[in-house]
Image (cartoon, rainbow, N blue to C red; front, side):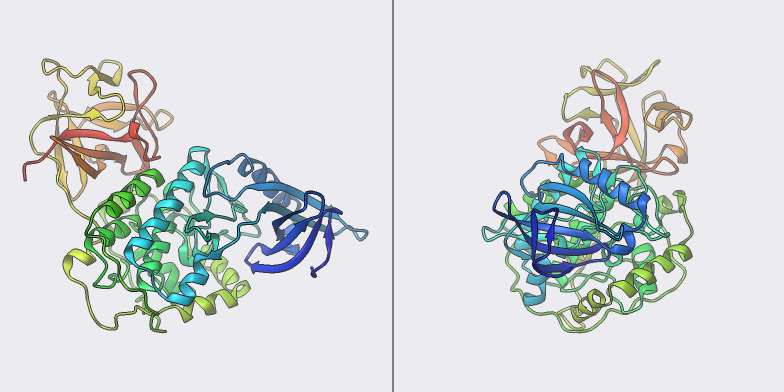
Length: 492
């Protein structure tokens, strides 16, 4: 492709403004409507794959339905065939003036915690819109976030997005996405939910604060191993503890240990911004060093051990090597930004903690849904919510530690997902390991602590949700109010 070429007798290519693993992005002119647009042209190798091309177009139709501030609008998806039978497949998108977050980090190295939280909150809110429409972005990275002149962040390039639980766009065995920002489940080529995007956005937040990605390395195997098995290095000492804790939670290996959805992540960022403790950290360039990653047998949590791994890692490693070979220039840029900005200085325990442990009460407590303000109850027909009444058997007792619990009613029956159903039905049974839930503290409201309950084990990744009417089900984690539950606050 060269400047001046006219596509579909309508779109004139003016300037190539980006290159990625799937193709090139051009600033172009729509000569019919007299407006500037952005055009993403699929790589010729991928355009020759008929099945890939058809899925690319079908998914574009789905993404075109997204209408929200902070999400770039998709205008058109076309395929042009020349006289030789060669196909040019491309997407025509809204052109967003501004600078990418990647360019901003190239210039400044690091951002202040406050600015980082504002950007992450805006992008997370945009992702929540996509996730509620059943779309997972799959390629969250600084190059796909544009910061406008007004400071607002816009999420671009839904070109490899796909629905919840679908395998996503692949060609010749490649796992699409950017390895340095990919979630563990994405690297394993497992089915994805919006919590994969939450992880990738956590990598972006880490890079904004540290001046490097958490597992920056010149060896693709080290990047892979870091995301799958290692904890990220501590953030700089001047990053406030609540910011470091939130970023650490987004980078949890197991999806159920992350914030329960993009909406929840956006909300937590805004809470931090509202607190006076989020002081500005002066931005400064990161030192051009690479963090060494040791490749050794991993130590996994109980929750991670309970989850099946899906496809074998060596197949994916071959995919990563192919992606790295195609994107050598991008890898060079990554290594150039690989420093930690603080030398050997280490943060205190509060700043480096990957998560904040907030214990649930050890006393029997009702569990109230935050949306309908009705209390959880186990009946003959399963789980439901009823009007809260102290005379009914609605008190539950939690057993466990470090955020993983079972919870039982006064009859000693525990909540569990029914493995013989569609995975969404909740039944009561004798308490044991299959009944464990990751119980994540969100905030305290008066006399109540507010939590999210996410399943652990073979049916991991579903959140306890107040369904239509009185029914209670397990649904994909969205961070909605219907997935927030209150218990009696622990005494401080």
